[in-house]
Length: 133
Length: 140
Image 1 (spheres, rainbow over the protein chains, first blue to last red):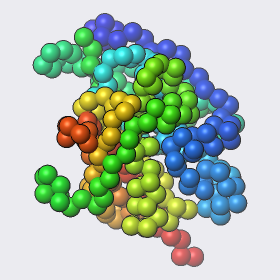
Image 2: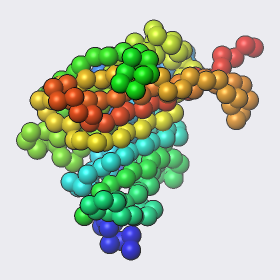
Image 3: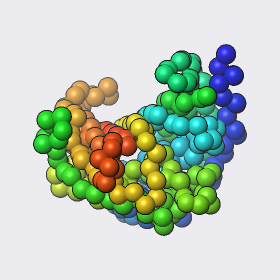
Image 4: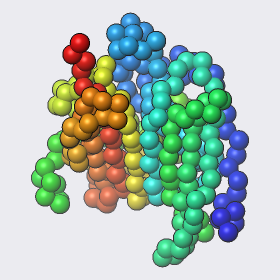
């Protein structure tokens, strides 16, 4: 039944993450937390160096979601941040349909999504609700 | 005060700009990049609230960024954002509490909600909720 509401998600791989990705995101989002561009500041926080914005990873997972559901309307997108992304990381996204249910005027699919590294460790997990005709 | 009687922490407007949407779509590799007009990515509302969040985290609360992580982000979409809209944003705190962490030590959890409405029609277009977690400072 679930296979009928949405096609299988596309393959989504991204990386290796570069400092340019981080700087481009900082400028685009207006988020200039020094943890994301200042190695000395990051080390003072006990980190090995700069890390990606959580919302950069969230944005990548959102792009995977859009590539999957195309122009269907997304009603909800809820993300949990599991671990930081570092320059050099290779990321991949996966997703599946958990269930679908009828609402007024159509059907809604509930999805689970994950952005992870190649070793399988989780970066961001998410759920989404998408309207399916 | 907001419509529902809660205390509003901040109230501001922000335009959904053509260039900003395109720049953000490029930064997050949105597959719709190149459409005309540009389509705001799912996480684009962070752009509308960036200045507020900066002030919220570093001045209003404040939280120590060296000990703070982003825990969750939650979007509810009622109407699609469109280039050319001006969005009125109203922020309130949903939660500000101290809990015992799983690995020992206490942590402060703060969730802020930004309600997004079309500034001209007054129609609610969505909600953005962010949860930050500040770990207790080590005292050794």
